[in-house]
Length: 138
Image (cartoon, rainbow, N blue to C red; front, side, top):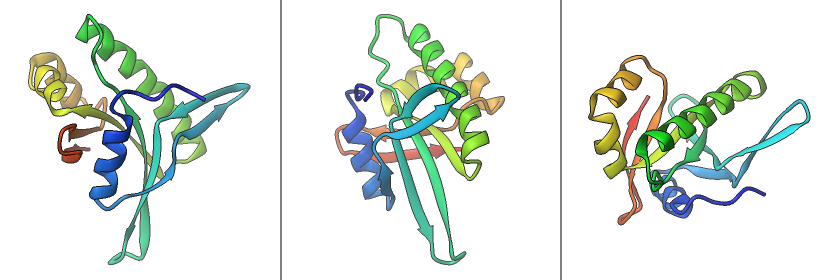
């Protein structure tokens, strides 16, 4: 089993508060002989549409000495998991969960704005103190 990110439980609790049912903790991804794990799998029933929305969530703390190295590592993992999910569970949407402080430090700066403009990553921005989702960026 993979090690949990330090904010794993914060994100899990924030998703539950936001009305999500945690279905996988972690969500196993298999491609060929390689086993990988996204941090969480969750579902939300959309009553008006009589269907469900499925997500996979990869939690990243960004506490290393270089925020750009943390970003590169997170994006590499995100791309790999995204492509695997596209083949194995095309109805499940992958999100990267980051703290609000990280969002402000990276994604409200030119490098992050470029990533969002080019739709390279979907984000869940959360507050680790209140364990609440602040925003979804599709």
